[in-house]
Amino acid sequence: MISPLLLLVLGLLLVIGGIVWLRMHAFLALALAAFLVGSLTPTTYLERHFAEEKGESPERAKVLAEESIGKRLAGGFGKTCGKVGILVAMAAIIGTCLMESGGAMRIVRSSLSVFGEKRAPEAMAGSSFLLGIPVFFDTLFYLMVPLAKALALQTKKNYLLYVLAIVAGGAMTHSLVPPTPGPLLVAGELEVDLGRMIVGGLLIGSFGMAGAFAYARWYNNKFPMEVRSMDDSDAGVFSKMIQTRDNQLPSLLFSLAPLAVPVLLIAGNSILRQTTFGSEEAWLVSFREALAFLGDKNLALTIGAVLAIWLLLRSPVSRESQVGNAVRKSLKSAGTIILITGMGGAFGGILQQTSLGLDIRAFASSNELGSSAILLLAFFATSAIRIAQGSATVAMITSVGIVGGLVSQGFGVHPVYLALAIGCGAKPIPWMNDSGFWVVGKLAGLTEKETLQTFSVVIALQGIVGMLAVLVFAYLFPHFLF
Image (tube, rainbow, N blue to C red; front, side):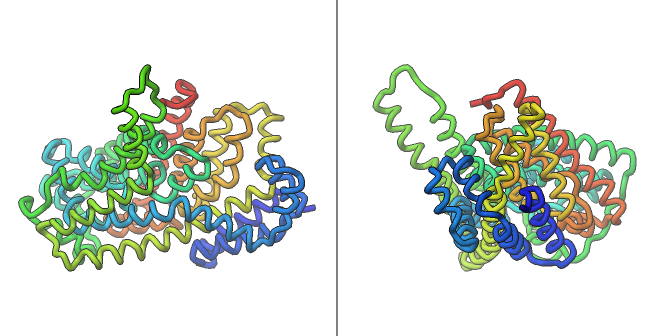
């Protein structure tokens, strides 16, 4: 009988081979791998999974095990899309409207005005860290790199540091802070409270960003670089924003609202649910109920999207006719991400149905692995998948299907820390099979060797330093902060 480990290897080979060598779309590669693994999984494995991992009765487990692979795959796909579909769509709208309204540029310029020219690299990193929550990294880099070039021409130094500061900040939140798809799916699969995931992601992400930024500053001092040319990024709305005067941009408070309001609502609801008071007065009960309603993740992100659209409507640098195009462009991009994320979740569910989690639990028990070892296992498993096929998101949604079952297996691992370990594991090590490698290299004017020495090392350090921070926090606060 085929072993669960062999099923895992076959599935990973098909995903990695399909994406890397056959140039398949990630959705198709994940779907084919899921069908292959699901078709080869023996009924006895399925019954064992539903009975021992899902807690179903033997009779119910047998009925579920006899369902067709198509039905099981569709069920997993629909379940995942139900968790992340609205969130990804609303986050895409927020990101696009922030950029096209000039709100993102206002945030960046305000950071620079606060920190000054001397601390401009820190301002670039901090702005990118914040904007990386709703804006996908590739798009964020398109937005920020013209500003890095303008700063370098103005200061006549630190070009490489400005570029790497954008990477150190913007790429960190991509795999740690919802509503970006990877951490959003991982949090959903591990049943992590979204407020806790946001707080944990921001906290661990700040450590990862600091470690990566320290290397960026050292490398810039050791190997200074003149401003390099980039291809055609002077065209389009992002480059036009660089030439926009400050008095034509929306206010800072208005620009921050689409980001800050959803985060505050979700995190506030999460913290308040964990807090108990001696006496629950009527106003406090009403406040709890209101925050529970508004702090629902789907509603909170929808509120953020409405604020972003309003920002675009009222922005001095945009016209009302642009709103429809901006929303259509957002949803077109979000549709692809939802498909990939949904199929990734379905593939993870199929992997779990092989009873692989039970075998991993037996391995961990026989080797007396503690919570730290489990977190390291999740980190290295995710890193191996990331290195092999290039996508951090695919690595995360595949890894959570492999190690996700350990949360409920009695190893003392808080699900937030496991989710953060998976997110940090999605960082090392980007190379030529990663789209971000080429985006950064080409737009910044770096050679392949220079990109490996800078971009790849910065991203890897984000994951390594972030993982060290996860281990420290898991040791000091095993039940998380709240």
